[in-house]
Image 1 (cartoon, rainbow, N blue to C red):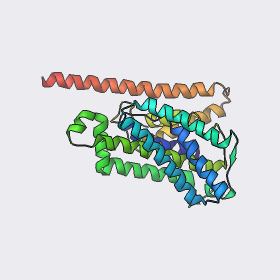
Image 2 (cartoon, helix red, strand yellow):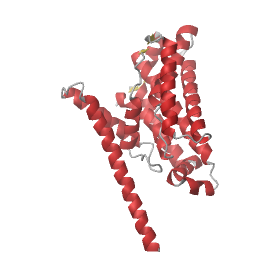
Image 3 (cartoon, rainbow, N blue to C red):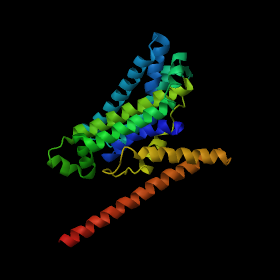
Image 4 (cartoon, rainbow, N blue to C red):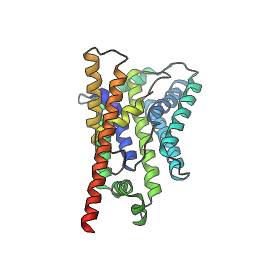
Length: 283
C-alpha cells in the first residue's frame, strides 16, 4: 500500500483531468522537477522541509497552470501540450543538475519516516487526498460542473458554466498533486537522479482508468485510484515474486494499460449504443 500511495496521489489528480476528457502526460516530469527545485533550495539555501514542500507545490501549481493555459486559451490538444511540457521539464532538470544525482539533507529523510499513530506518511497523505477529492467531486458546485463538462462540453457552456475555468483548474489540481507525490517519494529515498519519475505517467493513467475513470470524460471517482494503484502494485510485486524476467516486466505492465484502455473503450461504445437506442425509442 505504501508503494501504491505515490502513484495513487498523482492518479487522483489525473482522474480530475480525465473527467474533462483531457489527459496529462507531464505527470512524471512534474514529480521530478518540482521536488528537484525544492531540494536544491534546501541544499543551497538551508530551506526547511515545510517551506520546501510549499515550493514544490508551488512549482506543481505553475506547471499545471501553464498546461491549462495552452489547452484552454490556445486550444492545443492536451496530449501535445503535456507531451511538450514533459520534454521541457526533463531537459530543464537535466540542465539544472548537470545529469548528476541530487542528495537531499537528512532533514528530508527524517520527514519521510514520519508516521501518525503507526500510519506511514505516504499512506496518510494518500487517504487525505482521496477524501478531499471525493468531497470536491460529490459535495461542491465545482464537482458537479466538472462532470457536466466531461459529459457534454457544449451543453455545459449553454448552461452557463465557465468551462475554461473548470478545465484550467483540473490541470492545476493535477500539477499540485503530482508535485506532492514526487516530494513524498523523494522523502522516502533521500535522493533524486535523472531517471526519477520516468514512465510514471503511464502508471498514473492506468491507475486512474483501472479505478473507473474514463478516457472519454465524464466518468470517475476520487476513490478509484486507490483500487487502480493497488492493483498495479500487486501485479508488479507478483512479477518480482515469481521471478519473471526483468525485461518482460515492462511488457506485462504495458498489457495492463492496454487492457484498461480497451475495456474503457468497450464501456464507452456500449454507452453510445444505449443512447442511440433511447433516441430511437423517443422518436
